[in-house]
Length: 58
Image (cartoon, rainbow, N blue to C red; front, side):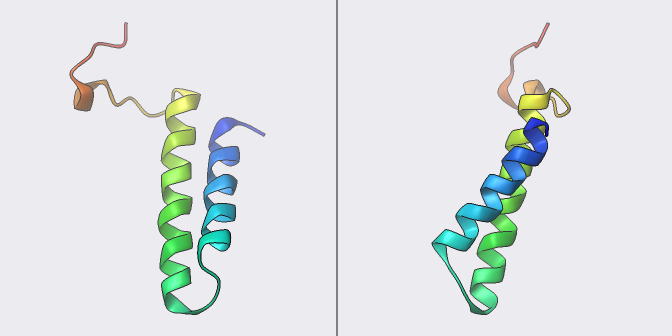
């Protein structure tokens, strides 16, 4: 299991822990899952955010 999958699963688990039930819980889980996915992609090196931070990666 790579960092992307781990991050997404962690985000989903946190979403379930934060809010359980109803449409608002669905939105919270969706947002935290997406945030975990983005963090995992950054850790895997598949998403380059150097343009946003103003730093060169190399």
